[in-house]
Image (cartoon, one colour):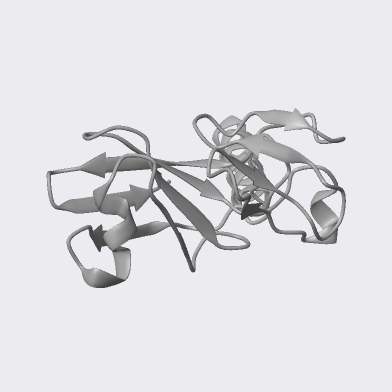
Amino acid sequence: MNSTRTFLGFSMLLVLLVFSACDRTNRSGIPYVPVNFQITVSNPEFSSLLAVGGFVTIAGGSQGIIVYRFSPEEFRAYDRHCTFIVDDNCRVTMDNTDISAVDTECCDSKFLIIDGAPIDGPAAIGLQQYNTDFDGNTLFIFN
């Protein structure tokens, strides 16, 4: 009888964990979308990433991804989903200074591209950042 209760308790816990994983979000409330791909930086499509300060916008994540070359060895990748009112599904784009991304669709929030932090507008949470790893030619972006 005691082992049956233990099994039922374990089963309930397992069911709760499975269902809670189905609605994953990150700290900003942006829906969790698996990201796992690679970019060959020398590919002409991504040639702006050859220089520090260069960036590209690519498909992926919740609303697309901005990839920014922070230094010769380091890249930053951010989801374009604005963090102000997540349910509005608004996107940020790089502004003309190339140092920030701005949501011109909904709230005019502005985010610093070097760390994703909000610097202007109503957003209080930074952009969702993805992990990056660079081997000298191939950039891996993942969560």
